[in-house]
Amino acid sequence: QVQLVESGGGLVQAGGSLRLSCAASGRTFSSYAMGWFRQVPGKEREFVSYVARSGGTTYYADSVKGRFTISRDNAKNTVYLQMNSLKPEDTAVYYCVARSRLGLSYSPTGYEYWGQGTQVTVSS
Image (cartoon, rainbow, N blue to C red; front, side, top):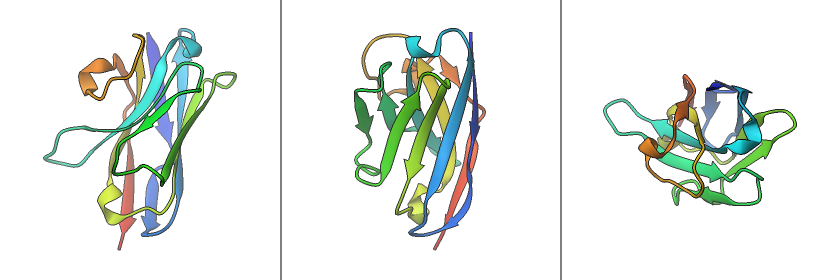
């Protein structure tokens, strides 16, 4: 079992930055690939970013590529999402996720563990 707790969400003006953190507890953090999804009310959860177990491989949704950076610190059991040049359309609840199987998944069903979510609101 893995417990995930997100922090760092909030209200920011368009063009600003936020850094989300996700602290993991439970089984060995480095055994899991990690990622971020986001969800707007009334819409399905959307893949944002993924980082492999070692941190050496990352993927991004086209909508955030060049603006967001995912990273992880296996010594601190923490994954981060640095979000720059934020846009109003980035407004959503952001979820930290963990995946035990190898390889990337763009589907929410590919991740066994989810955090409770943190709200990010970008004002225009």
